[in-house]
Length: 616
Image 1: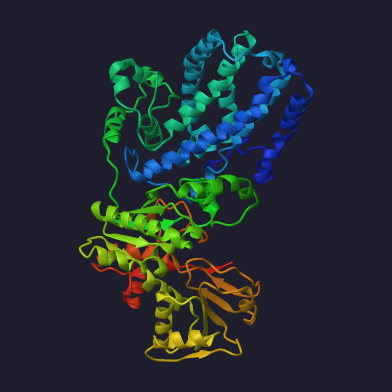
Image 2 (image 1 turned 90 degrees about the horizontal axis):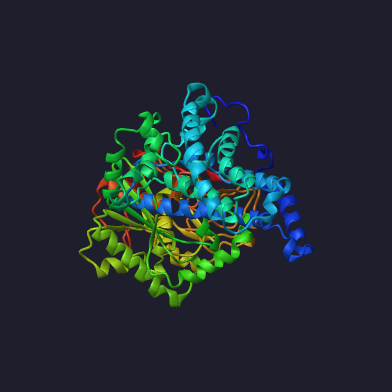
């Protein structure tokens, strides 16, 4: 929102929320009706192409943002080092509003201007006139409109909303108040209406011109430079007719320079070109990919999680992953990604963060949870994890943390097999089990003397029970077999079989059923130690999040959620990897080894990490 919102700031269909697309329904239905009832020679191809064109624009923008996020995470050719946050993602979540506006105006023009119904596919004279009208009136008028928008009166009421994004993403280009978009549409209508009224318009010139605007807008708002030097070397005047991402990036960091739309010519004519334009372009091109200090290795979970990645749908990734009706329409692509993941043979970078001088990256194994459960997939998955560990070691990373099922005991003995294979590994491998134990212990209400333990037995389960016994808390279980196995790991205290299920605190892992949850008394606190949260069967009980902590405010560029965790929450394994690097602990925490629980908890609190709240 602008600092002092002016008239027509909000979009007219804002009250409709996610149902805003319904405003195009009457127009689209009319087009389909015409297609079904009219003969081939009577069809209005301009009208019929509007809806497919709008969908192609949305896809075009999505491709740009995915590529941009991946490249800026790598660090190669990055322009501005600052990151984006959840506030920016929320502010830019309505980037498709301008596509809806284009659709409405296109349908109106198609219905009122008879010339649109008989347009040819191509006319050379129309394409030339469109280019000339853009280079002349559109670019020049935009330059002065843009300068006017930086006057304090208009800036505070309108344009400051766009400039809230210091570090831009491709979709930042279309984040403006409604009134500002109207002004831009009037400008961009000059070539479109001009060629329509002089009879030189074509389908290619109309749809091609809007595609050109999208292309240049997206390109200019990327936070990485990719325009090579050789076009400017071959034709030096090109610098006046085509801008680059670094050129426009300076406008967002310096504010009072580089006002041009796509052609820097008018900035050079009027002396508003930033003095550091050429230097920033050169330095951005020469910038190499970053080497992370800490790598967190995760993997895909549900088929829909491919869209939840930071390089996927921005607004979707900024909220805890949950089942939504809209994702049902994406299942063909979701399952196609599952099929393709079988042949993808390398991890990929999805996110970068900064904590002080510590450079953090998240890498993803292109495999889904269901594939981790298949024994015949185990060797291939372990190979991908092993290659990631070796790559982190080669790149000089201090720590690599194994997230979710990458630390499965059945798969690789909690990472232990990799330490055995590479005893001289400099990068420390961390599974976060000690911090997970600490989080579970500190989630138990003070004064608790007995808990009920239920879940699949594992390294983490044994460590938790041992720690509970050490703190004098009696552990009860459902089954006698569990009691015997858990008792063998405790040095003090006892493990008993529960018969009454009166415990108000349950520590649960994988395998907790709905029937078991129903045995708990009202108000029971369920504390999971599993990687994945239990399916909630009670509305009258409290459920903690899976072991995780809220990141300190100093951790930057955090704009996506870890699947089902709330904003700024990080899994225990991810936090543990960061703590090992911050503290300089030169030890592995994987396999059979467990780090000092009290020591890692104290370090987490000291570095600003905080426990997550109760899950709603």
